[in-house]
Image 1 (tube, rainbow, N blue to C red):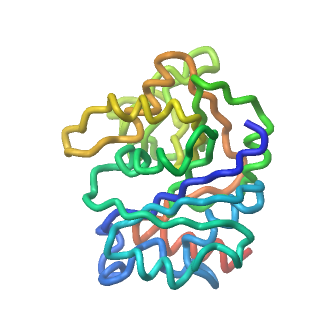
Image 2 (cartoon, rainbow, N blue to C red):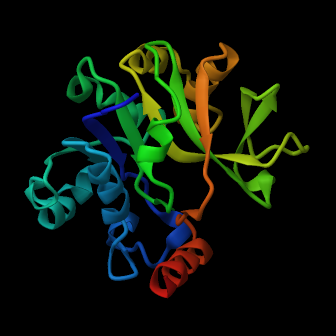
Length: 240
């Protein structure tokens, strides 16, 4: 997994859980501390040596992202922006990166996931083989609010979204890494009951084959997708 040169930033979604803050603005452009939210994951990618980034967002948000980020030169990278024309889930959005990725392995970050840990530390943990994938996990106090990794003998064997019974407390965060094989997996994913192609379905393909590698985050992580968590993220960043 050493030396990934490409990264995908997923910055779609309507941001309904942050309404009315997101009325007329993409949630990933909201300020956290002294800069827009999307810059935090973007800078994580640059610090690990990524040189090419594809940002995927809704068509109505292409212009605001282009105004903020330009072509990526300011961050020492080549930035491409592509529209997810119709919202269809994280896996569907990721599928749009196939041409950009080509034959290389790559990082995937959700734009509203903020975290302290270094991607360098994560990628030094293991090699990523062609048929493997990677997720970052984090211990959480309310497992019923997240997708939780079910563990057996130190391996992830299943991922359950918002489990009703206790299967553990390791949440699957929005930090992933894949090889180009993931696009074959995405092609087989069926929409969930809510009509979306879920990233958990993709990751479960690897988990159930014993091919899902992981790293447990040691430091602060937050999904800033709700008003409460967004405010908490601001408090943390400002207070550092």
